[in-house]
Length: 221
Ligand code: HEM
Figure: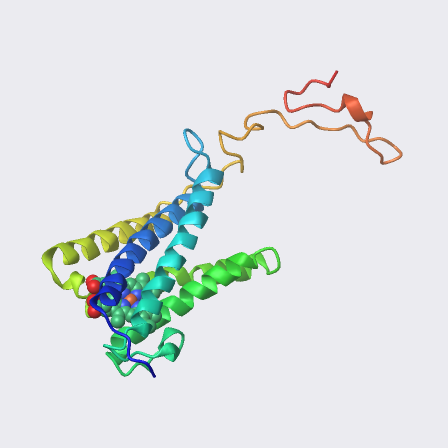
């Protein structure tokens, strides 16, 4: 195998690891906002959900760079298998394995979300719970193996991320509001009375095509 090492690979591993943790913290926080049905006054729940999804893609890109720069840097021997199979890295076996487990769980969450329309909602929700486990595992990985996480500012950073996610978890489990009407205040149909169509004997729609009630409750002209 060709030996490839430069301090820039190591810097990249460290920088992308820190950015990935920061993004994952934001992703979990936004996901909690969506799950707890926050949004509607200034920003709709749809927009928060879109931000949650987009940031998760950016987080996975940073993770991919973090992992590739780790593996191709021959200064420490981790090996390609350690990217998906835990406990096979000759370098810091347990600490790297925690990162691998976190990455595997994130992949499961990500793939299940890509297949969301093809799998049962209950299955998707069950797999989505893995994101909490994945986050904790990733944070322990970072705290145990990181160079920057050993310093005071690094420790403060880890504590800040952990604190934000603990608050989100507590709020998610204990502060969950009851189910709303299912529409956000930004929805164009929010607050509009639902048109109730009288039943016709034939079972077909009672309104001629261009006289159906609109969201304002009046027939179209
Ligand atoms: C969800 C998955 C992962 C996350 C969020 C993550 C995040 C991090 C963070 C934040 C650090 C600390 C950076 C520093 O303080 O210097 C770190 C370090 C490290 N990670 Fe990961 N990591 C993940 C997966 C992996 C995997 C799968 C591997 C190996 C194949 C890996 C290898 C390393 C190594 C070798 C270091 C030490 C870098 C140094 O010497 O400072 N990580 N990771």
